Amino acid sequence: MNQFNTEQFSQFNDQFASATRQFADTAGQVSRLALGNAEQVFGLQLAAIEQNVNATFAFWGELAEARDLDGLKTLWPKGVQVARQNVERAISTGQDVIGRTVKTNEAIGEIAKGQFERATAQAKQAAGNATEQAEAQFTKAASKAAK
Image (tube, rainbow, N blue to C red; front, side, top):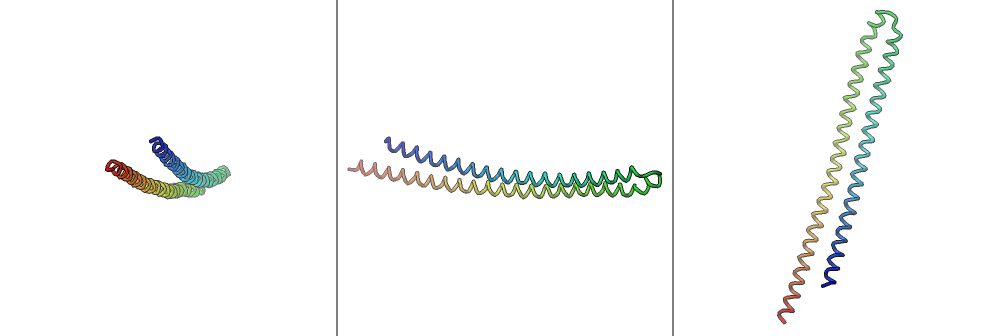
């Protein structure tokens, strides 16, 4: 009976260690994907902000050089164009960020799906093994009782 308990403990310990290892591997994969996405998103947004700031300061430089009302009138369309380009750049960057984030989340979902499928297969195998062991013990006990 003691050997049976030791075998059960060993089997449980192995299953627990395997599950823990799989969880750690999966968590590492998910973290790498999430951090990679965050790095890309941050880079995209920083580049867009840099371009917007450069365009805005260039316009302000021209605006500071205007000496009369006619100079300001000629800069008005350029100011509107700079503002429009800044807004378009921000929207484009936002769409790119959303697209990259969706792709990353899909990849994380695939990892989770694979993890669930592996866990289901292992549970079915463990249940099958337990059933076989119980049947073997029952058959062994029945044959001893019959003698």
